[in-house]
Length: 303
Image (cartoon, rainbow, N blue to C red):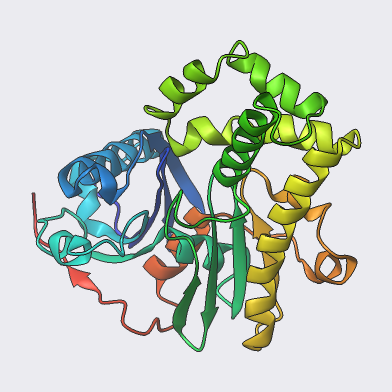
């Protein structure tokens, strides 16, 4: 049986997973679902298939038929939306919803963190980026991708420690328990490290960040320097928003709690816990309680 009232769908399409949530007109959650990665780096078609799988899983949990997608206003936060041609290609997709608005996954996270109010987030995860929302507009700082950007993120931390470990192996610089553990991961064989690096992803590099943080917490001098440098980079992003008059700040991402402990006290005291997640931010766009500059609404067609 068709639901009479309007429905609202929020989607957080990220580089590692996609999450969807359906609400009714009163904000009551009806169903949630997930799927694999949804980023334009995989190609528009693959990203869209992942989004639809997550939406179908949410609809199944809510007991809704696929035909009821036509009642849903959708807000979709998508990783890689800023890639050249991505937004134009998405507008060409025939979708089953009543309407769709696409925003970046970073903006979805920012809107969720601050309940749609002006504010900013800095993401400290595998990578790093600053995303702000002020006066109806998105403001992005950094986040151009590893290894050319994303300073302070886990992948950058991993890259730094591996470089220093190889330098220590050559006796070009000092060693420490941290560097010895990293060298041990490659059986103390630089050739093995080189072979690994030829195939390694940002996620692979980021897997070394917990090792660095562990040793830094134990007082390892090299670990401390690496983490202090990462905290400085994250702090610089926070400072950029403060200079632009944004004082609602949240630190999010898998390394946020660890990095926060290394920030200067004044920055740490300014941080506010995020109110909600990126799916909630996408739902705010779907509900449309405020106007987003240059975020077009796309009226529905059928698949």
